[in-house]
Structures are given as C-alpha cells and as structure tokens.
Image 1 (tube, rainbow, N blue to C red):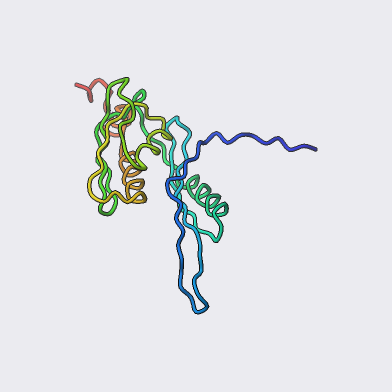
Image 2: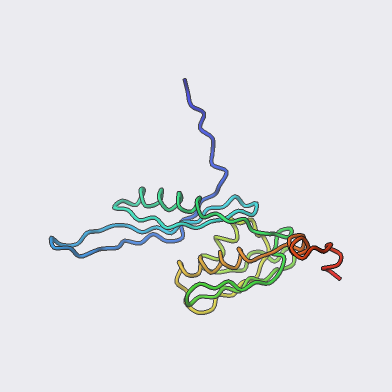
Length: 165
C-alpha cells in the first residue's frame, strides 16, 4: 500500500548555518547550528534553532522547532495594521505599514520573515545589533504585538466604528 506524501503547506528558509567547535580533552568537536524560519504566506510564521553533528540533522531540528514556535500575524491586506517596534536584546526592529506597490523594504532576517508571513508592502529599520538571531527574534516580537482593528474593538468591548472614530 503506497503512502500518500503531501507537500508541506509551509515554506522554509535557512537564515543562518554556522559551524561551532568545542575543545575537549582529545581535540576539537565540530557541530553545526542552524537558524531556520518557516511560514505559510497567509499570516503564520515561526523561527527555530537546531544543533547537531551534521548539517541535515541540524536543519531538520531547526524546522521542527520553528513549527512548534509559530505565531499568527494580524495583517491588513498585504501590509501591517499599524507601526510597531519589536525588541530583543540589543536589537530593535521598526516595522511600518506601506502603501500598495512599495514592496518589502527590509534587510537581513527581517525580509525573510516578513515574506514568509505574507507581507508584501512594508518599511523596516533595524537599530542596534545586526546579529541575525537577534534581528529574527526582534522581528518576531514586533509581529507578535500587531493587533487588527477588530481585535482591539473586541478587547475594549466597542464597535469598529467607535475605535476608528
């Protein structure tokens, strides 16, 4: 009986692959560390870290970790509902909504994460440390804090018209 293999609904992206060595009594032990991002381009995105002695195993672990740490992002069309500042350690990432046709103006890991989340028009600025791990986590923090008008209205017990004024 043939098993049906379904293609993953998530797109994957490797943000960083690094070789790390640990000095032990007999010499150096080499292993690999991988930072991966995963998203469905419809508002779900996550990042994960994987470490192993081989690159393929580290990639598999990173992607599995990213699936566990997925978040849902509030989007407004192809952009963000409002401006947001995401912070992680010494890095802060400013995410600004942009008009249609602007594109994803972002650097480093921020671009990858926003594209995987399904954002098509956005302006960003990275401040502080440009370390890929920190940039990715700061971007994820900013995306996690986004709220749609409907969510804010529901939380405050008001109608959307009352919120918009």
